[in-house]
Image (cartoon, rainbow, N blue to C red; front, side, top):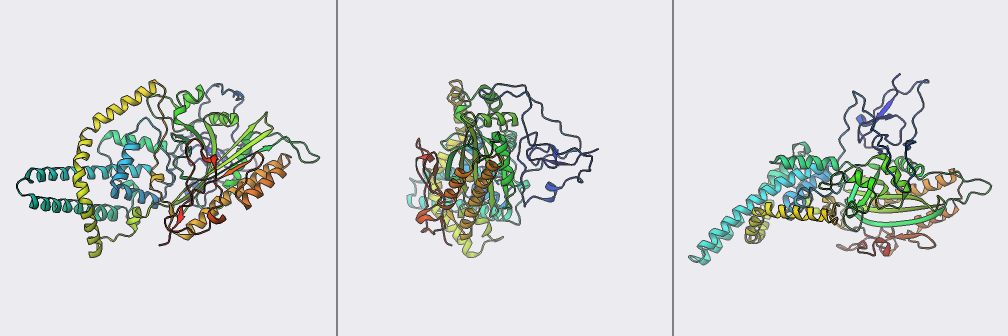
Length: 576
């Protein structure tokens, strides 16, 4: 008899209809009210003779207990039954993707950083950009760079003509040269805004599948590889903060609980950290918030891959020392690393809520570890915020199909201001392009030498979504919704912890006290608990309105790190 199944939205593997964790890729099943019908359709309900649903993932009996992360035989992935549809493509936020495509076409510096920091770094990991169709943005970035290079070549030739004829007619040559440069920049600006942005990136015209394809086969393959990596379960970072790609840190909290103290008249029921992780994932996944997404992620610094992690973790993450880190690790390794809790590669439960068409995304990174012979439970939570995209990158929503006289003159006037700088800088841009193969060759040789010396950092240091984020809210309701998402998730997590403790006959009084402190004041430091960067902003409430251009705070940096003190780290408000 055929059992009813649900297909994992990440890998397409068939699971029992009541599954909580995919037995192939380890993805946590969550409720997403925005999911399409095709993603939620199941086969008819089971009959009375059907076997009961399978429990959440548990390691096979051959796995070794993990103090040392010993290698166990690789368990082959279950075969995908015939007729199973391929994994559904990830759902992207169209508006945020449109805005980032607009950014690479209208901001030369941003487009250059995107190409140099992502496409031209084949040995490094790629930072995740939640809600962004990264492949589409990269294809537009390459098209924008081709057009910008052509503009610089024409301007460089113009400057050469000006310099040659300058001794003959000084004044007339300068004037004519400036006017010609103005015309070139104005034509390019009008082409970008009304040929590309208005023609392809407006809400009614945008089609990610129609993004311009790279001219070289190498770039096509590189973008396809990046798209696959962006759907993995590994975050490899290179900077101090590990949550690259998920926005600015807005707060951290942590505390330890004595799990050996039972409720009065009861005996503690032992539990594993995996049971607690699955319980939290399931409870948070039941939240009826827009775009809630829960997944297990492995976070590791790229400088630790060559020597800092154990052999088994390195074998999975770095299958080829000359190439980028793997985008995905097995559920078995994730299970054992969570059991250890103290390694340099650490699993987190990432709880992300996305609203405002993807422009506002809050993520809570949660980690639980059982220490001291399973008598102490350490819990940490770190919140990050992806703020709305900068206002200049939203210009696609303001353009008509053809410019009015005022809009035409505004673009032409702005081109006149930019023309002198672009004209003078064009030779340097052209020379850099001519020598780019040599520069790239030297960079690859330097990186290969660093790999041999075990000093190379494979981590990502640049995120498209982070780089395009503003420090301002553009709507009052965006600020309120950010508080709604963050506090609702945090409240559900703490409630789920209390439920779990009570279910296992552990005295929850200490946890309830700390839950009340976090929920009510947001700033507490006593005993073995620390809380930094709380939800309390200037004046004691994040709901306060800041002056235009004023930020609520910046995250701590350097060796002191986020635990050095409180920092709000959230955008200021801005009226329009």
